[in-house]
Length: 139
Image (tube, rainbow, N blue to C red; front, top):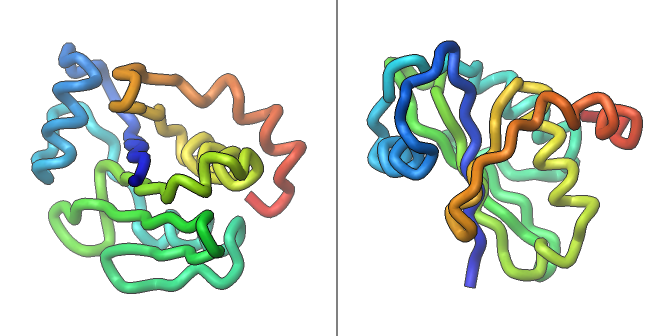
């Protein structure tokens, strides 16, 4: 069993519901209004927050017993940029609140919102960034 989280940043509101945006992201279609994110910056932030994370090119893998996760993203128009990323968490990771908070803090540093399709809810992370930054100095 796994738990998926999706992250993106809109430059201007697309007018689409978060669930529709998530479906487009899953199909690697770039909705209008999405900000471009640097894949290099994304990888750097995950490397800092999760030492030992494995870089497999178009995805990152962190294996920590039952607490692992995979980070993946669509490429647009080259492998150096993306408009979104997803984190596929193993069930054990959900019991490790610190790891989940570090993932959310990374998204906050990138200015991204979080969409949780399991509960069909979007969370804006920018407001929570300052509180998390004090807790996670490496993120």
